Image 1 (cartoon, rainbow, N blue to C red):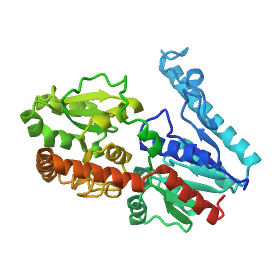
Image 2 (image 1 turned 90 degrees about the vertical axis):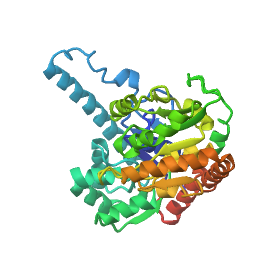
Image 3 (image 1 turned 90 degrees about the horizontal axis):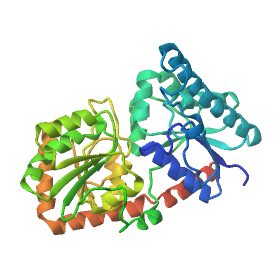
Image 4 (image 1 turned 180 degrees about the horizontal axis):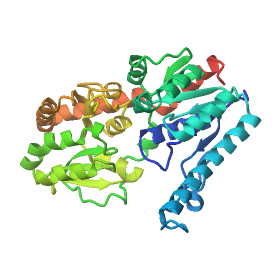
Length: 404
């Protein structure tokens, strides 16, 4: 079999977040199966990849905003920025054309479509009549319905395959009356179980905080409204105040940072709620292993946002955390209610705060129950979200349907 897969992603490592991790894990496993041609990305790269990847070097091609000649003048600053983006666009076009001419029967997979470079790539592939698949994650659907519904209609009708990261995301597309006739496939985000097993019991040098004898509650995510971190802080305030050895750590960056800090200040919880900012993968794994409860009560943000799956939930479950999540979007697939933790209706803010607080009282006071749930959560992840098994099944589907 000579046909392989080319992945294009505008959201890829070293970026953080679910799409970047999803794309990386997919590419890594396809490479192990000898099904990956290459990854093309518009994200500037800082490290040598472990498989074939086409991306501009960050140190040579970064914008270096404010440091280029002319950046002190508004007009020249805009021109320099335009040159920067055009340079990336030309790079992407060149790589797409080069591969399509050499391997015209390969399948292109675009792992995030709500992006200018992705729109450009899809238009080129469509014009050249090449096979391509798209991955939909949830928020991208809502974003395109609002900003470019015609493109969403077009790409769904013209794709050879639509890949959804959850059944909830598939339902979201159908609920918004977007039609498609091609085949579809549910490819969940997954974890490299063997790799993560090797990370257990390893202390990260990047986690510079003393957690000795602390009962640790964590959130690791982008600080966006839909994650419900403000709800988590309100729900945790009584528990944190009443227990000296309890601490809530929030890792990640985002536009909600100032708002969340303000809440913590107003509640006088600065010693009990700590913001860690951006952390390394090593620190993340270390933090999750030390943690007992992972909380992220995601919600729809008044139907303006969507949690397509929530890879953070299955990472925390693997490290035997009790999970507190929202019952919105794909979180209901990554977290099994009562077996892995609890799902709350975080769109109903007041009820969610009370439900979370009561549930914390229950699992914190009952160590046997907490252990039972955390072990069940880990088993659920190992059985259902091993990336090796997920991508193996996906590759078999592609072969059976003559897509590669």
